[in-house]
Length: 128
Image (cartoon, rainbow, N blue to C red; front, top):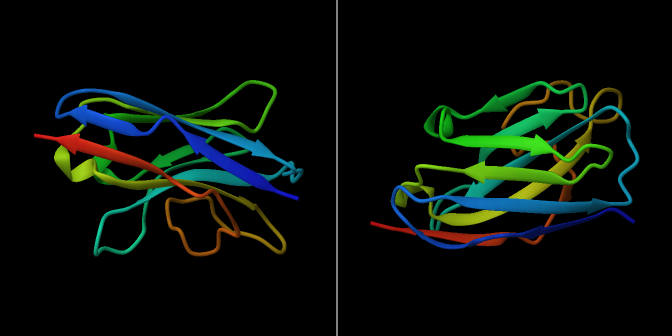
């Protein structure tokens, strides 16, 4: 059974930093895409950053240069370092995973559609 559990959310002031982590278990596809997504109240869920099993990363424009996605060596555990936070970054942050290739995603990109495995989310609040 695949499980994704996020941690590290909280409250930060604008300009501050937070680091999110996602513990992944039971996910065995060697070719995969994993990523972070967020949803603000009253808005659609949107992509933040993704990382493919071969190492390529992709970010939405609004977080480029401020957020860094990474995977822990030897595991599928996922991290998101968030610096220079802005109030617009407030929302529930989710990690997700999906196979790349046949039966899964064609491309690894920060688009929530097509991801089949999701965590429960962790709240991030940025105050001005």
